[in-house]
Image 1 (cartoon, rainbow, N blue to C red):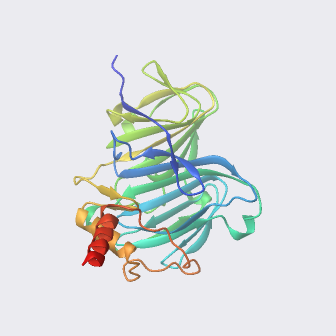
Image 2 (cartoon, rainbow, N blue to C red; image 1 turned 90 degrees about the horizontal axis):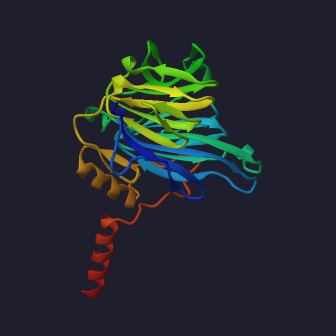
Image 3 (cartoon, rainbow, N blue to C red; image 1 turned 45 degrees about the vertical axis):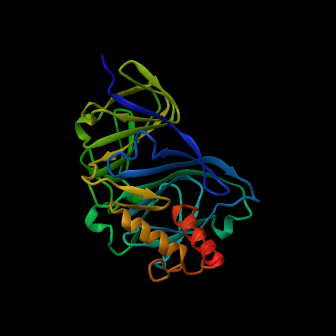
Length: 311
């Protein structure tokens, strides 16, 4: 029997300053799964009392960010004026639209304490007609996220709509982000409920598909979502995500996503020049920021400066 697994991606380390995360998307062979264009698995790691998460103010366009924690705490501030702590089981959903700036830090009351940090940072592309929309922000409490158990299998629908359930996260296109946990070996068949493209991330334990075993920190991309059937071999945690892909290609540079490359160039210029009309300051966190990575844009600027001096 031919396996329904079309691609196997190993989690790879990525540096976001003083913190290492496991990057799942994008990958060379697969730039997106449905509308999901970027997934970082944070931790699990222990931040000592002298270590803190400090992701400085940085910009986004053309996407929604989804932050979901399993342990730890992050304090979110953004250029819309939102300032809120996100705790385990809660969801921060921020839609950048035409442009937003935000920071993510260890809360002040925890900055001299040890803390385990574990969770997901996810980017989801926007439909073309919303790429230039006004930015918005929503915080969804743990008790609002649908949870249920069926035949010994625990489900949690973090975002989207599936299996007759709907998360309150205000998504902008058909998608799903589902947590599945088992304590004992179980056979799970949810293919009839899935649509579009689908990926499965094995966080803990082992799953068996068509007689082949896949282990921890592997991302599996299905060839056919409707054939999604797997077995867990014991205590296992997996995350199913996906949905309808966009008809237009999405391009990415740094923190910017858009269907129009010209909008990426415009965003680069605005952030490079610190245009606060395009990217407003973050209230109470406006003294520092993440600079634009060196790129063709920067090299061109350097060349122009050198040429000017020579003249």
